[in-house]
Image 1: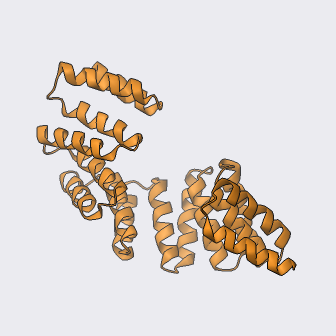
Image 2: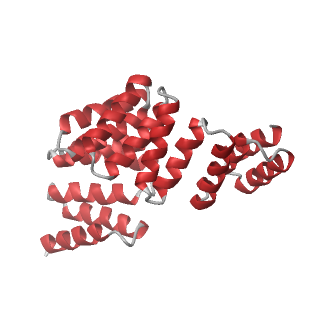
Length: 252
């Protein structure tokens, strides 16, 4: 147990090689420890090795078929691979085993949202928030889904609630900024993109979206400066190139 706990601590510190060494050692000592397999799966997932993560979650669940946390973690790995139906099955099993598992409900909601099943996603986010009223990710995710549905007032309310709980939440500023663009409130959107970029100055999409807001306000030079910043950070951002071309046309 000591090696497993230390391995998990190394993972949380981003020390993945040390984490894997400790978890390997834990499993050498006790190859029937579902907790160690689950933790090693988390480490593999953190470094993007989702197939190996799934193998470890499989082993954990083979040892403990009622391990809700391992079902949820395996669901995350399947979702990262785009295996959405398998992810949904795992999240649903996690919730069946632990009906109060707000994280599994939130994560199932993200998969449903990715599938375009927005109303079901909102139901899961709402259930997660009923269980955990300070769950900022669920507010942001529900806000994103309301925004996709064009229910901008509810979206902004969810972003506001998330920021009332945590005032440095990049995803909430960014989501609210985009929603404000949709309703034509460009100056307030720019304020939110400013705040997002204070939190993460390398956030290419926030530069691109702020550039779009400046474009809509007719400030083409500032728009181009922001779009240049976006492109320098993400040369594959097609929309930023498109918007920059439009801004140059406006300047003649």
